Image (cartoon, rainbow, N blue to C red):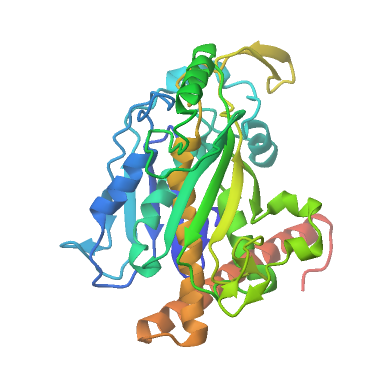
Length: 392
């Protein structure tokens, strides 16, 4: 399925289910001779794995990445790289009581409506565990990002807001307001003991980002970032710069005026016309509460019978700490695409491999389009046969 691929200039295809044998990713567009950053990828995976932190799922996964292809003696060969992470602590029995019903807040009903089948074992491809592949793939692009710095941190969890952002204050929640951290942890402990969950708002600030990244109309940098972030299962909204506060501002208040030193303000969050303007790129996104909770809920079965149930199993009280490395991974993939394309159109130290990569991506898109056309043509022929229409 095409939707399992992220394939612009840095092409990846992900696979695997939450309670299947493994999760993995195939990365196709990696230059040969690059030192493969295995340790860096593993560190990123360790940040998002379950079982780490007081309010994370108690599922104990080592999430040790295995390299199946594309790397020889620590160097990339130019061939497709396949990374695999085995599921070692999946408990399918925890989900047997859910196999005949649709869980509220999950993708069960929508998947069933589309495919007439769904994986009730932790959500299958709709599970947050799918994001392992994204984090693993993003570990390969650090060298392209160079001095670009991505800061991600929650500014609100449930009803508690971070009023003072102090990045020197480090903790398992990435919460940077030491004045109410104890209040927050006590609140989360109460929520955990109730068997419930909470969401929140996460802020992103990207510094040292050059002007000129992104393209007009359908390939805007903020539009691509929005799609990448909202592709993360628990994310339900995003805003850039002043965001929804723009509704209360007048034009002279909303515009980022300039002087000879550059922009005086950054109300637009570092993007104008879909292209970065050299300011810090700032946006926020909202994360919904984990839908799996140990509280009685109402739903229906496949036969549309009304029932009450509890999810049981092992779940996150607050998923935000584990979403942070996933969001950072998706931001890296978007920025690398934008940088790679800008490199092509501005001829920045471009070499033969860069040109070949660009041509390969176009060829890939042509083949995909031809494949889709062939499939549609087959359906047209079948339709004509069934309706006694002449086949040309």
